[in-house]
Image (tube, rainbow, N blue to C red; front, side):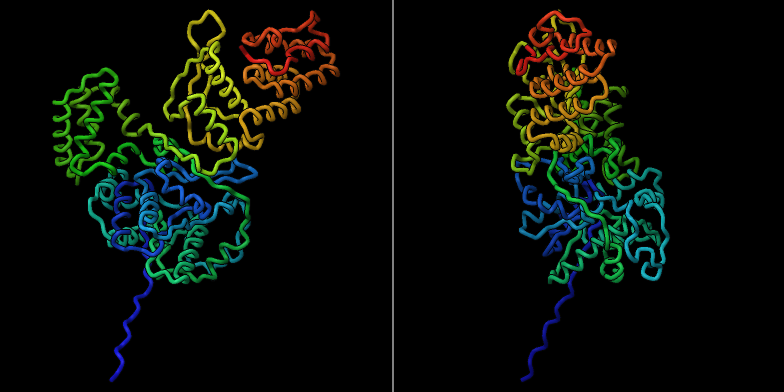
Length: 568
């Protein structure tokens, strides 16, 4: 009896899911494709330093929009953000893997290399060897969406992408295969140095996963990279290794940071941004048959919040008009342009000014993400978070004005915190006109939290582990480096406003040292206005304790020498 023929083992399968970053249609397609493929591992475009943050992505307290922040430990200003929204394909892939217990990792050029200045480094070994590199043209990366939109007869790339991708309600792995072919036509024989390095590392990760015995690998990346990640067209591993050899390195760290809808918008300067993040989120989270009517309900509520008329009947009429406009224009479904035109015609009676409100609050959105307390933070960031909570200072991406009465201890503490942050160049708030007041006990601050402040906090952490200690250390450093007495006078004022007794001692010591060796009366006089202007300081700190002439060196040394005094 002959043995039954062995069942052939299918070859490993690698599916590259090319997406548009922050595209709801792409995000929906990724979820469906992963359900169909059931991969053994999910790879996501992004530096591997973000792998340490993956477990926190399953924490309900981590609420998008958020960003993976990677920074150079010794020079935090060298940093990179990797934003995620609810409708980001990468976020959908991450959540799918966590929900299904599937291994997931980031697979892009490590931040330890590109934050060290890969672009400025000498070419890696073999990078310029024409025999190793396929014959391709060097150049700038083209805009693939514009190229495909032009080929399809569209003059607006965003509109083509919405019609072809974002408004799709069905998807399959075949859809991603067609998109790869289209992108291959856009890429042609062009290569870009930075992309070459990144794609070489992505291929290295794919090879490692296949070598480890993975049978089904899903790679979620920007559509432009997809053609380069097809194993059938891989260059020799030796070429990729040559591209990745001898790269500079720097020590880096990673954390989650809150992001905002405004920063997801292309208009904010974010290169991978979209025109309408608020609309895209609505499109992604809302059932298909409710997208249009629920949008106009939100528009009506926003208008009513500004005391503008918006009746239920007008919402119904706007919904009908938007559908008619989409049909006349031959669009697959109602898009943002139809919603805007219908709102203008029915809800705002042709006025554009109310539409600016809708654009800011709904089309762009005002959401600010949240991160859990367990998020890895530098000690200074943890201290700031505790102070914000204890002082009830709400962190918001929307600009708000806060009035402070310095006679009240809690509000004085808020003022002290904001002044200390200003010293640290963490410009969460800026002072504005407090309005009519007969005294000096009022302050007004305009507060707005931006994602970049997370980097500013990390930079400030080089001075200390708490807001107070960091501010005092920075004041002491500035006092030591001050070039003239006028600067020292300004530092005295900052110490009084920020309640920094140790910083004040350092400034007074520096001031005494400078005045002891200075005989320029005019320079000495320049130190007095800053001290005199701090009229909210206690009398013992605001004025000399004894009558002396301004030219007397010891007068400046004894002025404001009382440590530990408060502003009120």
